[in-house]
Image 1 (cartoon, rainbow, N blue to C red):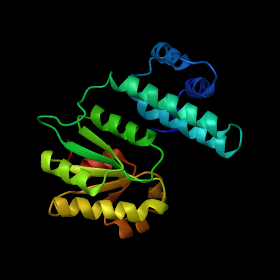
Image 2: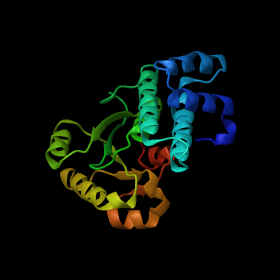
Image 3: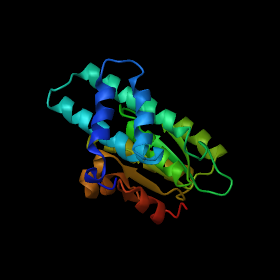
Image 4: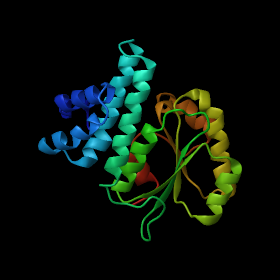
Length: 218
């Protein structure tokens, strides 16, 4: 993100208002409002939705809204993101001439909005993405046998999942005979040094530009 200060506060607030409000279908109003403000759909997806989700989470942490309201709001943001994906070019499995990335949400991770945003941003930049949720060894084995991935990205919400993440990194390395490079992102980056040491990943970062550059994805 370029920084919250560069976002239009009124639009962020409007997104939060409609996501947390009682009116069904209200999120559809956002398309016209963002279009009128000359905000591209890419920015709506990669900047505004994450900031709205952050503010909704902060409201929950401060007990200004309840868990049920948060759950509904995040679900609405995910539905909005899916709608925006149809407006962004790139396929979901592989491109003939571009890089293909495996994006993994490990077992036990409850939040998928961040992973969906990452996938959309990668596709916008011309990188094809295959997302898998809570994959087992057999799932990864089948994927590696049928699709050649240039890198893997794993999203991790906290250090509580670090051992699961380490097993995923080891499995990917074994299945690809050490060829697969792996980046880890998510809240775990706040403990980058420990995460690197304990998982064996090549990168721990939330900077997609760094991942693309380091892994030569475009």
